[in-house]
Structures are given as C-alpha cells and as structure tokens.
Image 1: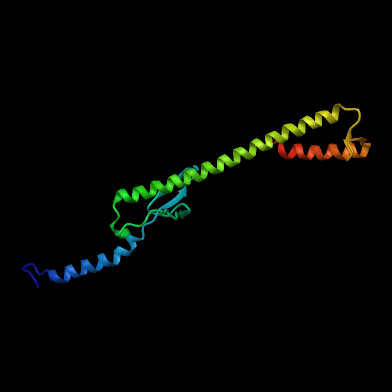
Image 2 (image 1 turned 90 degrees about the vertical axis):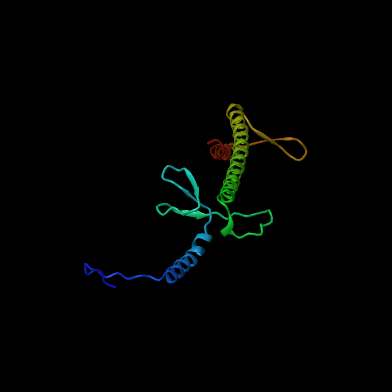
Length: 165
C-alpha cells in the first residue's frame, strides 16, 4: 500500500504477529530453563557465584544435589527466591568443604609440629651424648659404632628437614 508521499507500508496481520511472538518465546524457553549455578575465581583470587557463566574467566558449573524431594513444579516455575536459596545452599556446601580441608590441614600441621619437636630433642641428645646405645631384646645396652651413629644422625636430620618447615 502506498500513501500520498509515495512511501510503501506493509501491514502485518495481528494473528501472524502473535504467532511469530509465541514461536520465538517457545524457542527461547529451553535456554532460560537450563540456568544453573556457576562458580569462578577472579584475578584477585576471590570466588564468585552466579546463574550465568563468566565469559572472561574459566567457570565451573556447580552440581547442586537436592537431598529433599523435588517439588511438583519444573525449573521453569522456580521463583527468584528459590534460585537464591539453591545458590546459598551451594555456597554453604562449598564453605563447609573448605572448612573441612582447613581442619584436616591444621591437624596435619599439628602432628608435624609434634614430630619436629620430638626429632629436634633427639638430635640435641645425639649431639650432647658421648656415646649412643640401643636396647636389644633382653634390655641390654648395645652401643652404636661411629658409622651407626653417623647414619642415625643423618636419618634424624632428614626427618627434621621433612617435619620442621
């Protein structure tokens, strides 16, 4: 159709326009329904979580395990609050995992500190003593030769280097 100024206008049937809009919405819906929880670390070492992957950083999709029975509605129906709760749950699980690792590392460090102190005390004893001995099966003293003492001292220094960092 042409108006008085000579420009052409094409009229779109309302029914066809609505069909096109509905078709586009159907195409977009699966992409939005696949929204997950992503985790990434920025250049400052800070951990971030979000519902979209960060393009400039390597991201990991979090596997959120629901231990409670799933509600009757699908992920499409999840409200913003429910997604927030899932994200918070994932963050809490991550925090607990990190705390468990820190506790294990702390216990391991304490064991190493105790071993370090024990080996240092034994080394002081080796350095002060004129002669060293071991006890045999019957409880009798068997004195170490110079080469045995040197070997025992070397072994003890290796243990000190290992546990006294």
